[in-house]
Length: 157
Ligand code: FES
Ligand code: FES
Image (cartoon, rainbow, N blue to C red; front, top):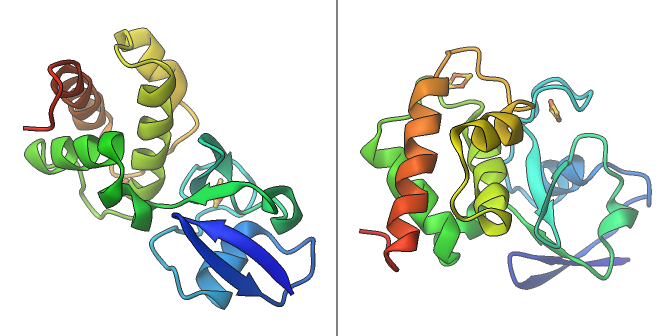
């Protein structure tokens, strides 16, 4: 039995050490907010955080996360930066089909936690590994800038 900390809760799963975190989340725990895109660490749809760092859960074995904190899109409602980013996503109507968006938000949150006032270039660099086949990139940029500005003012409204 493997014990995992996910969004502040302890979960127990009976899985092999080399099972990707994405499989554990979706297939073992029914947490389907995190998406499977390419399965090859090339699209970012599966992005979650391990100890605050954005990682590709499709290729990261669950053994990497034991004793560490996993955060997923389901946990962003209870996270100050996560909430600000999600609010800005709604205000800017970022999503189109929506498939890539959980991964986009998780990468944006990890960026803003390390770099609270990123430049446009820093946003572009941080988000460059998250592919959106609907082309929502301009709205993603606007939403991240808005979330950063709101957080700098000390709130999410
Ligand atoms: S599904 Fe993991 S990067 Fe594409
Ligand atoms: S919103 Fe459709 S892939 Fe990004």
